[in-house]
Image (cartoon, rainbow, N blue to C red; front, top):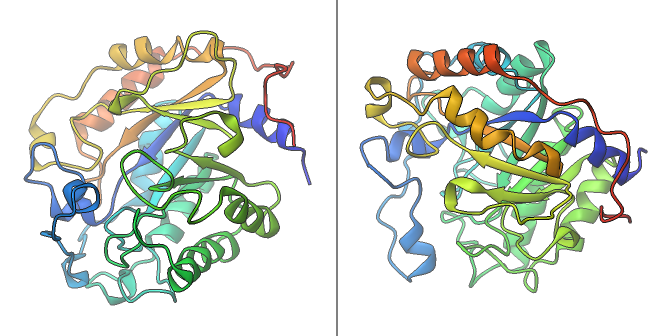
Length: 320
């Protein structure tokens, strides 16, 4: 077992990674200008308007090797894939829900395909998992014992059936935008589960905003307005996107993404504060990354200059 401080240092020295947003939101919201999920349902007691039919999941040209090649061309050292977003559709054949790829038209285990492709090119491949689950009714008002079994069972599947996972990013949990609180599902319960299954797996909570004690890495969703505070010494991760939304839009293929230069300008101030930069990739509904986004990642890789690895761990880093 490697110490938490050493795991944190190793992660920070990776510097640049990518998020892969490819899930039910790719199908449901590709004609919307702004929506990525049913935010009003969770936060304002609205009835669900967008339940997802499993049979509608049918990417005809799924190509995780292409995703990995694009990420590699951009200089990415690590990646995270959205195994289940807030809608609740699981991208692997989970035993804890019928709402998964096992009942889809295309039954490919996308989690397995992603991990194989990224590991093959030497990119450290981690996972993302949403505790908030609109289909299972897991939200800020409900996280009962049966629902906890779903959460813990699915996390156990992800950390048992797919080999070594260097980090798990958890969302929709004790967060301003929805999901159960720590009073309903304590951080320690999930952290203990993760560490019991994979002692060297970092647990990162996107929604935690009060310091490093609720996450192994402090997360900043910069695209949602979260900035790193002056004087922060890490360990942190900041995520951004070159397109308008996290999930693919039909207009993305014919709309210029933000430039590699813009990404570098956002990225470079992060590194002296021991904050990694995570830049989103959004495959289209067929399962491939559009050419214009792939080209911008390639430009990023050509211009990228990463700093030397850190050797000394700042005193403020989490020790437990």
